[in-house]
Length: 148
Image (cartoon, rainbow, N blue to C red; front, side):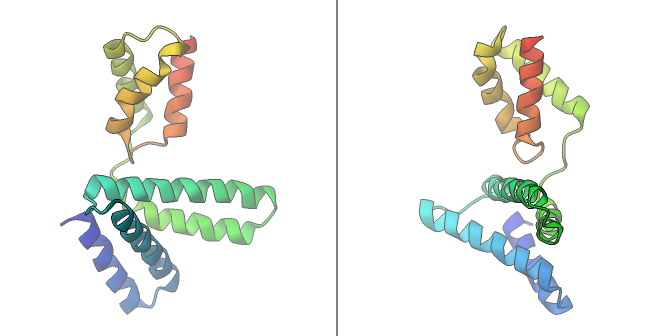
C-alpha cells in the first residue's frame, strides 16, 4: 500500500471516529502533498511524501520551541500532538549506533579530513537518512566527528 493511500485511509478512519484533531492534521498533510504536486507538476512517490512529512515535523518542532519560549504551553501541546500524528508516516527511525555507523562510512567514502569536507559527508548521508533521523542532530554529530 502506498503511503498516500494509507494517509487517505487514515483520514477516512479519523472521520468515522470523529477524531477532529487527527483529522485536521491529516488534512493539512494531504493539502501540503497536493500543493507540492501542483507546484512541481508531478505525482509524489513515497520518498517525496516522506520529505513533505519531515518538513512539516521540522516546522512544528520550531513552533514548539517558540511557543515554549513565549510560555504558551497550550499551543506547544497542540503542535506536539500534530508532530505525533505526522511521525506515524515516517519510516522507522535510526538508532544512534546506526547514525554513527552511516556517518563513519560516509567520512571514509568521501575522504573527509576537516570541517571543510562537511558538505561532502552531508551529501552522502542525507539520502540514506531522509525521514529516518533529525538532520540537525546528524549535522552536529558530523561536526563533532570532523572537529575531533
